[in-house]
Image (cartoon, rainbow, N blue to C red; front, side, top):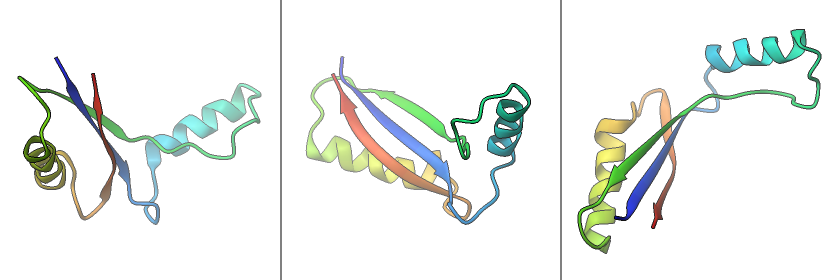
Length: 82
């Protein structure tokens, strides 16, 4: 069964409090290899049947309308995983 994966991230210009908290934890643990952390969301949409252009377009529409909040988030990736 194919799966469409949708990745959503906070807009780059907005503060990411979860990412900031994780970055602080890295620092406290002595991990200094990373300059920042941003935390997003991943959605996996199971597809019954073939992933056609129409199905992919519907996933994009749902990602923009339901899975993300366009005011504070961007849909950064939509891909098909077999």
